[in-house]
Length: 390
Image 1 (cartoon, rainbow, N blue to C red):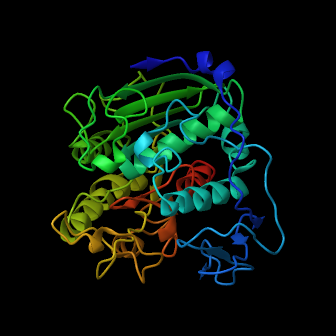
Image 2: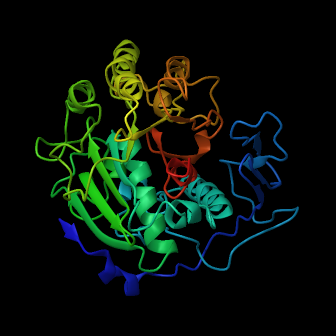
């Protein structure tokens, strides 16, 4: 389904925030720190984004949401950015505001939304308005992964659409007529817009393009590329560069300038490691060794942490107990990210390794048996803001 985003510009809704939960924040290139004090039932989490010395903490509760918050308050009169399907490119199954049923759901929405609002102002300015984003040197980005990569694509297009008037020039998104959703509690919209999509493309004013093609997860033969890794390997070996392939939703305007890749969560740990090593040995190292100006910048983001109530936090099948499918606030490690950080070396076999650094963000997942995807807006937006500004 093709969408010309310009027709949406005048229809954007300014959502008045109904959220009374307020926070104070500090944000710079090194620290994302949020501090608020709740009256009771709190869990204190350090949001340090790689900084070993966080300057403050974020306090949250999944019990009763208190009406009074002491300490310094900082709230916005209107919702910043996108919220509750105000962006025509959002998927309903990760919009926690849209999925609200219970007090716990409302807590997730409030925590994620306030976190997003605290860090998102001007966060995308350098991505969309840097010197590299002009008609002559505009970036063309190829993103391939599973639904976790798709969340970053949604963040890029939704923040561009809601924060900057007229920036989104054209989009093509292949919305599915029927959403093959396995979790009924997440499937209030069962098809069409705000349901689910596979391949999607966006063109921004000035010529920057971002194309997402899934290689795993919910997909069909026409809008996914299951063997994209093998194709990239063949192109790297034969040409010293890679292409967009033939499954993009929109015809790219030129060669790949930036490759964003993630193995995803649909493989066991052994196969996950094998896929990652194949990506390094057959794609990134051949591209880097050829040292050609035509090769793309290669960005890999670590797999977001899962926060299931299991021995290592990872999803262990739908046959697990009801309790094992609940989200916990914090886990000790992220097995996939640990593997990624052992194998990938920035400047050696990858250009950029972007770390989610999210062991203690379990309260910001969608919930309802989904402890793999984060609420949107939320944590994926802070990662997406850094994705192309590195």
